[in-house]
Length: 166
Image (tube, rainbow, N blue to C red; front, side):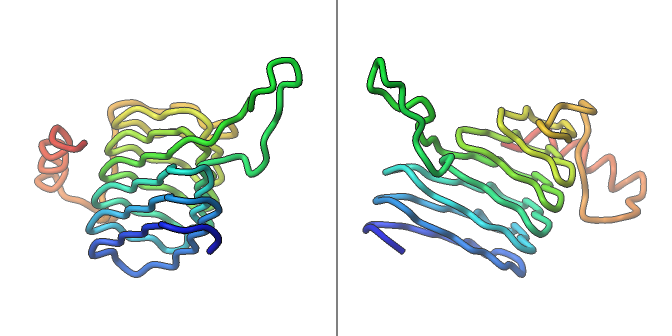
């Protein structure tokens, strides 16, 4: 790790393979309780930028989450950076499929699903399924469960619980 004052907090996570790269000072990675990460890379670049992962998320393998593009694009007229770093927020109960790339500045709403191999350059609202390059909403008012074959009582409980996710 280069720089100083990096923080990584992992709260009661399930089995996880996490590769966290901190490129600048004062970056912060937080993973809330009951989240399972099979294999993910977190790239934190931009002083003070963060990646926040909410409670009860499920990450497949080969996931890449970045707070920066890795290199600055400079406007020569204004002498400004065209692509500044920005934090990433993934709210509670989000399922991210394998090979997904989540870009800087994105918020993924609670209860949502991101399909395999998607690139997510923009915010995803709550309780939707999104997929593609770039990711687009393919279904609204839906969510997921860890149970592959939920019964009707479990489905009713999920529907009731989803109102409280944030």
